[in-house]
Length: 634
Image (tube, rainbow, N blue to C red; front, side, top):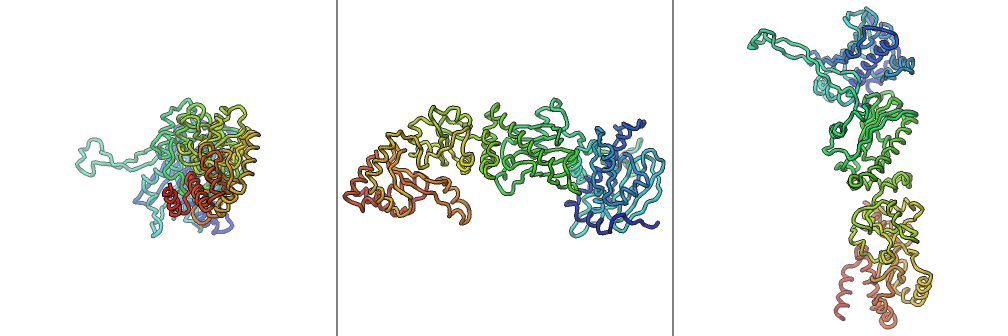
């Protein structure tokens, strides 16, 4: 029989579809199973709307039959089948989708969820086959036809014999090459894994027909001829997705088991988010907040994203566009009929529905985390310990775009007790007349409580936030304010806590000691912007403060960056001297009588201030010699 040519512009189009459209060869099975599911859906629709009798949906099946000896894989369904004309139209015309036409005609139908859209999925079979044979009999017809092709050179269609309605596709699997192992698509364990990965939630049972040796009735079993070969079937898919069930049908164990199996965790999730949404974008979502961070979470290798399903068929394993970076720790999946996919159904087109779903998921995750914070503080604090740094970074990144979303989820250590506090709780405890949210930065909470810069704030009875992670100050600087209260680093130049009388007295003392402070500033040779009398120190003799947008703690973080980029960052340092400390009287006396020793004292005080800040002393040898010299004089 003469071969017919495909109704495409050229053979190159088919070659492109086989070799370029799909990323992974294994996708062929997903496509053929989806087509079989569509055929079953079409027949079910006929039974509902055309008053057709004799159709029992409970008998609908998709069957896989691998035969390693013959190198064939057979996919069979008992769906609606195809007429000769439909064979010609659907399989003879590349990119002609019968499912899309059916879906367009039945847009108002309920309970019919057609997967195929583009009419190219069938041709994925040629990625693993050198010959494809399709035998089909349409519902309501006694005639059957067989379509056969070896690829771009065309196809044949002829009459055939088929006892039942439906379609049987036989793939003649290619021989192995040096680069490709095609044997895997004949192995039952591999086929099971592919069904589980891509087609586990197809609504009809997918069964594997495997030849088994069975003892004949009345035989002893001591001779080979006592056994017969029979086909036994095993159902491979779970069919009904957990996320499409009603919440009242499910238990915590159902969710926990699903999560641990699906996302390979050994602990139960801290929170389950199960939602179903209709409207501008219709979708089901089943999300999980892990109770601990994966080992690679804070590395470049970690890949965020939700599994994306289209009508129960896995399309993407990691859809990053559905999660903002700040919630990258969330695991889960989204199942939607509304997303526009590219022709291979492996990638999304960036459309309005995608953005709508992503926006709604973002708000839903935030509300669930906030509910956990309010109602289950212990669990939330455990989650925050694992992922809080990501939330804080989310405030700082993208120029503070997500600060409104995240600010109520943040936790910080504070001088108020041993636990953590939210910003809302801090503001609720603020004393009358307190205008700022005060904070201090460092890595050790106990040390921060004793820092000289905090003396004045503590003396006034104001609560102090302890920012102990590198990202913390960048986070609060991005927030700028919370509930109309600005953030204030106690190491900033001016805390604004003095009375008018104190300000006048400080101005007077600064003027009287202008020459002394100028000498000390000159002695330090550009290491500080200025030496000033302090309005924040009570018992400590000295401290460092900063002016401008870059604090000393931020400088340390930025200068720790790899490469030479961090070297350019330097805070504007101010050395503050406590005029009420005994050391200041000594400095005044040395200015009048021994300026060489005053220079030595100045350098020692600067080095002490560096050590208080956790910064390295620039010349430890000179520091040691100066200390020993002074001790010797004593």
